[in-house]
Length: 97
View 1 (cartoon, rainbow, N blue to C red):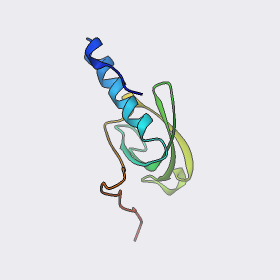
View 2 (cartoon, one colour; view 1 turned 90 degrees about the vertical axis):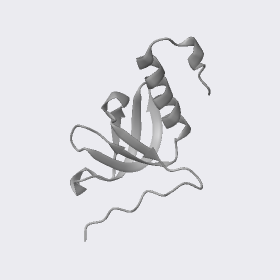
View 3 (spheres, helix red, strand yellow; view 1 turned 180 degrees about the horizontal axis):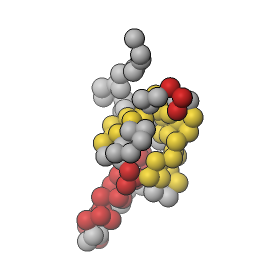
């Protein structure tokens, strides 16, 4: 689904629509999300979008107790993200040594 950004005038609406479209196109792909609030970092598979919230099946966070469960992250609570795509760099496996 492509959004016609030329009909939008509100920069926040354009920003939110672009992020939602990017995550919608990334469903089924691995993502790294950094958030300003606890637990700060998520690595997992994008499962679905529910409104303006991304559901991620989280494999890795800073804390093992919070891993291997689904997290719902509102797009306004995402500071930085990366979604793996075919032919693009992979997110490294993060492990404790």
